[in-house]
Amino acid sequence: MVKAPKALRVASDRRSLSLDWPDGTATKFPAEMLRVFSPSAEVQGHSPDQRKLQSGKKDVLILSVSPVGNYAVRIGFDDMHDTGLYTWLFFSDLANTMDERWSGYLKELEEKGLSR
Image 1 (cartoon, rainbow, N blue to C red):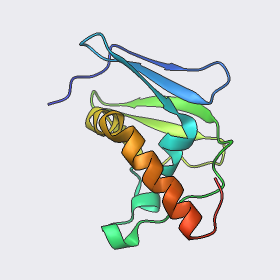
Image 2 (spheres, helix red, strand yellow):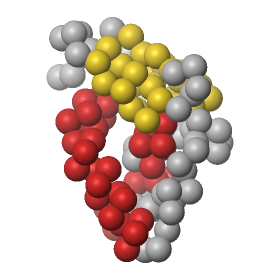
Image 3 (tube, helix red, strand yellow):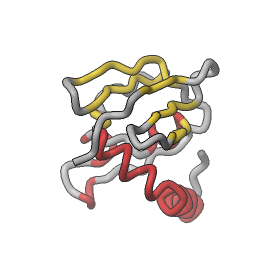
Image 4 (cartoon, rainbow, N blue to C red):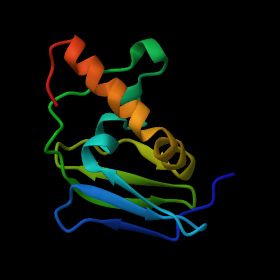
């Protein structure tokens, strides 16, 4: 079980979200990454083959971060997307796979002729 972060901070420019974990580590997530990997059904679909590649999100900003119980937050973005529930486990998994997932995302964009 992943424990809740001790603190969440949206950067003053609204382009990133930082989490301070109970073990003393911190992770900074770019807003663009959180948006394109949103755990929402709108992005992920209801199965892997329904996933929708997100493009044009390079300049997306975080407008809000709202708690959902003791297990997640809902992030509102300036493109009006706000349906993903970002659990502590989601954040932990993303933190551990950021580089791999990001390079895969960039490759997929390039293959489909899309831009960030």
